[in-house]
Length: 162
Length: 329
Image (cartoon, rainbow over all chains, first blue to last red):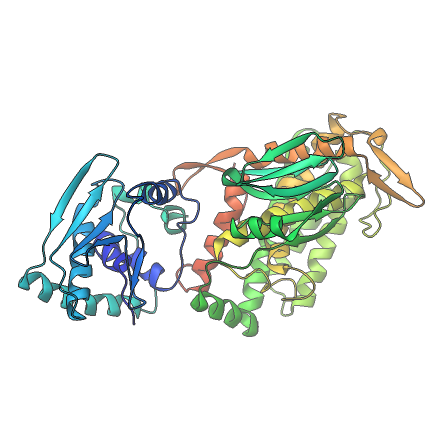
């Protein structure tokens, strides 16, 4: 099973969303925040070559000199999950012999960025996470809703709570 | 997001990143693709593949109607998001007869509940409808006891026969409406039913398109036969809430009268002006919202169609048993 950056991200946000996503139930289409995210992504860093697919699995926003991996986000609301997403990119590329130095989370809307490094410990944790993601994807039924306040803004809200 | 309804005749073309409708007199209208949900063509439009490709790329279904206002078909862009897993479950619930009947019965239960809701509303307003209500309630009890789809369809037919029998009582205008006649509709009411039902059908189809369900696999209607039959299934629940209510209101308020129709050899069809009035009412009804008790949000009729798709998906994935929409407000 190919594990994408989005899956790592969702793993930290909501495992139900992760399950839906691994079953190709994508309800993001037309959702306001998602569309806004797409626009921000398209409109920023126009000089760079963007959306680089690596090994048919991860889709990196852009890379500087094959050294620094960038991930563009709309806001810092989900920073922990975004960090792990970038760490996974670093991990994935190093596994395949690309010696990337670090990652950067870019927030063009608020003109902020954050550097991300991958430690040995992070690498071990990622290995565990990858196994857990596989387990979740193989569950017969979707995990239950998390009833969190973040649900209200989620593109899956109507699906989960109707 | 908006539905665009085009009545004028002319040429539909892609112009840079918009679609432009140029009328015969050279005047044009710009259709913004970003806010377009779907496109309805009622006039005589010509278009090229460039335009269709662009609409498809933007995932916009185009619904075509002929000169008489009859639904011709839909240009349904190829599915962008396909869930193989969901498709398998959809098929499983079709081929397993018990499972199929189960879902089909629920569609009829929902439709019947909403029909009764309409009748009770008019009873409360002083119409003599007790007899029909009792008859339909008796038929309602038989729905869950049916063992074949044909039998279920038979009961649905009987419910509709009793229901349509009450329409001359409900409608204040003098109308000649004995029974439902399709192809071709032979009077004002039948023409309105045909036109509005096709609108409900297309709206459901547009919502199914974004829901990831496969529109050709249906449960009440036979799957894949002629049309996107899942749309017919879901439309069943919404027809009493949209088609029927709109007809009562258009005729009782005399918004539409016999003058809005033309009679051509032996059938009635709506003139453009009439179609516009119906569409206006249809569109504003779709946007009406009610408070949803679980979502704690206001939802429109259109959104309710989407929610039906979601509930069906949950049923297919074994998460929660499907309960068709029953008007709760």
